[in-house]
Length: 94
Image 1 (tube, rainbow, N blue to C red):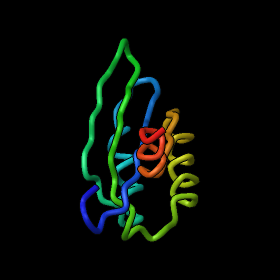
Image 2: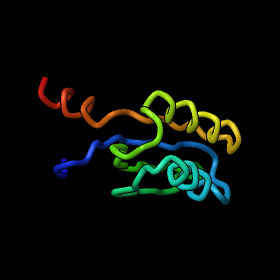
Image 3: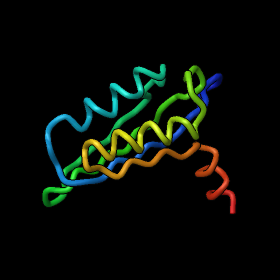
Image 4: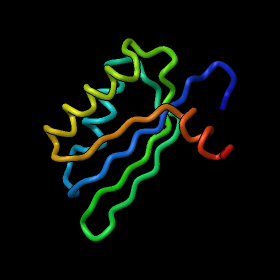
């Protein structure tokens, strides 16, 4: 983790359509969340995206971000999840 960052992982999965990246990135921009890295692919018509985001300067805590992204997912027909990066660090220590 970069010093001073507080990272989270966002996953987006659903039927491919236009505007998915725009919808998610706009919601993150509105909450002052910075996208550090992004990976996306389309597998047989299913859109799959993973984002590494810095939530340190976010206007909302991770729970509120989860709710906001859930609403974006409902509007776009996507399943959107956000998890704190510390969860992944802890899992790899076990």
